[in-house]
Image 1 (tube, rainbow, N blue to C red):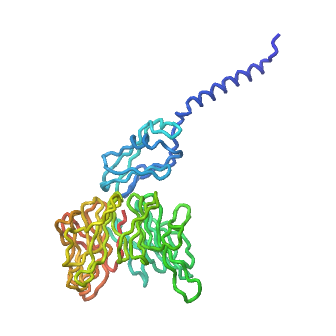
Image 2: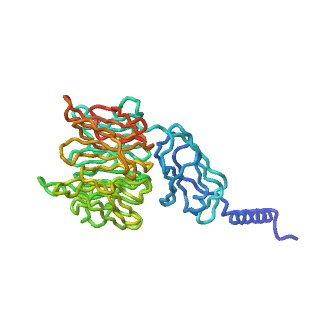
Image 3: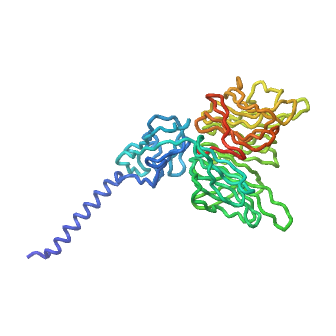
Length: 452
């Protein structure tokens, strides 16, 4: 007579099946798939011409297996970087407005544990034209305004007691701006490109937070000057801080509180961060991976303009030429550590400043003033080798500022104030490199920046 009942046999049979299934799962553990937490640009969305492409994974990946299987059509040259479990593709040249791109991560990409992506991950997106953001006096104080296309009409984005300054995110979706609070400090706020979702990002109390810059991976570097310790005292020296806009967490760039600096600027690949140290009269460039610093002598108070891969920078400094102070442009290579004059030989008949490198790396815009003196400027555009120069704007008795190139390297955006005019007013202009024509975009406007 059997010692097992039908129920016992059924349970035993089920146990065998479950153990077999468990064994199959363990045996196929390297094929259960890859966890994708998110990607951008969004499926069938419109992205900035300069927008990075990224994929966020749920696990640490075999980086080579991912990089070898990630493609974009039409083909675009660029650079791949990793930030934790997120891979970024940074285009060497801007994407084409109106074009549709297809991103594909082919099957076979795997985690460090060997789990495989079983099927291709594919999505498409379009590219929008760049617009412009600027400040305009609105009711006695500055507000953010935007042109969402170069042929459109300006729209007001903020209604505040006065915007101090602002910075547009690399993907063009958000604008960080600074605003005075009731403690005379300056807080950081966020608004989207349409003027919606306006919110306080960082309450700085009595401290003053300003002069921010976005990295390609969404971090924010900003200047923070500590508030007075006692009534009537001045603000402390500014230091560079980092801010995660997703969590609100903020930390000093340097643990050493003696390191001061302001006006931070990220390299396009976020591998380096530069800021100006006014005490030591130098630009400090920090390698964000190794912590190594490069020091560039400069007395002008601003950092320079990066090449697309972050390997070089153009900046300017003041030199004494026959007893006269003149600005001159320099080029630094962070790999070789060479610092060379941009022009060879260095011209001594003019003051050359504010170099701005186009995103495609081929053109440099700069502000030029005759050595004989005077307050009038000109804007020149020269190829990267400096062999000749085009005059972009030489309007008489004018001051120029805030030069910047659009993502496609065709349009040069700038602020102009014509001092000799009967009714001088700040204006925002563009110069078209292809047609060599200038166009007024907005009157009573200043501090222009591209809205990609």
